[in-house]
Length: 501
Image 1 (cartoon, rainbow, N blue to C red):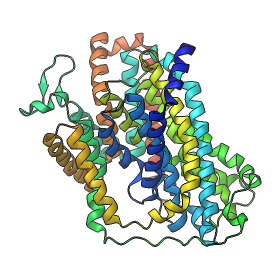
Image 2 (cartoon, rainbow, N blue to C red; image 1 turned 90 degrees about the vertical axis):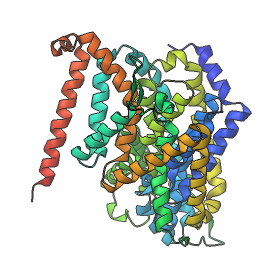
Image 3 (cartoon, rainbow, N blue to C red; image 1 turned 90 degrees about the horizontal axis):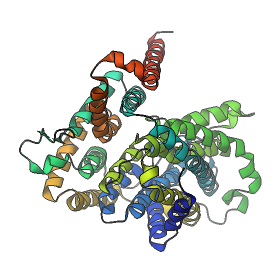
Image 4 (cartoon, helix red, strand yellow; image 1 turned 45 degrees about the vertical axis):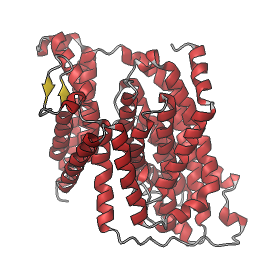
């Protein structure tokens, strides 16, 4: 167990002016980019990672977490106002948020989204803080062979659920693992695939590949398609009655089961790699509608629909860190980017974090709770401001994003070499998108590639390459059985859906 004085020291590190200031800055930036359709917190986190290189690890990672949390709150603003979610996570919020706005109650809809988002996020964080340390103790009992089969199971889930088709998901997985092998062999220090470029001895810069694959293709696509005109937002009526602008305690309390259901679904799905907050929001919305006494009211401005969707997608943020911190396996692209941020500061996510970096982890937990409070107050104060952000010309927003990408990679990834690498990764990202190959699977595979290779080499040494030796590793065998069962179940269900009625 982590000593109590270490926990207190970590929490005390959170409540310093510099940490709180950067958490606040992250929340503000996150809500801003979330309110602009097309950017989103993942893009903002990828852009911000190079700038955290000069920060203290707690400050930098807390800043990124603040961006992620704020982005989910901001994403609900355009979903409510113009039926265009700022992030994919807020798509389900638009089902009832936009109709409520059309009824002349846009502020009421945005407040319900804010309150339920903070509620779900806080519930998920409490579960993260409660279960992560015990799970890390269990994870420490796992050796290389068990970790190898756990990674294989994670890859299977991600390929099946996120890859589109198994074939395309498999291609994305293979490419991500292949690019992760560039650099020095971890066992023999032999250069691989560097093509006489000494800058590649340490592998492809994390900042270059994150921005090149995730951000720049979308920025260039939006700049090419955009006309520089902004979408007109719904005008927020002046002089509204208080009941149309506020959420009363009775209204909030009437949504308690919807929020509890959403937070539970979001936490469970967030702890599983590859499923994501968008799926959690839709599942929670569907479950809430199915259990309601008046399901016909959903889609027409029912605040319980907003509460279910927002509590679910926000609960995923904290839950995504459960497998990341305890096993070193990211549950989403945002969590995968956090692995890059940890590695920039020389920290390897996984169960040893609670032994080697316990003060940092509990400082991060404190920053997450602080970010929830800041999310609430910034959202309260900034709703009308974020509503005007929706009108910002795309040309201005995405040109600024392009400049930030160039600056961040130049500073954090080795000058011009980093820019050339980012450009090459951008071309790869455009190619993957054109072929329908999942960049999400690719990114997660790339960030897990080095760990997968290390555990594979260690497992081969332990077993001598003999499958019979797996009999000495019952946990690994159990994971193999679960993996095969998941593949069989997924294949059967897909086959059934493909059959004509």
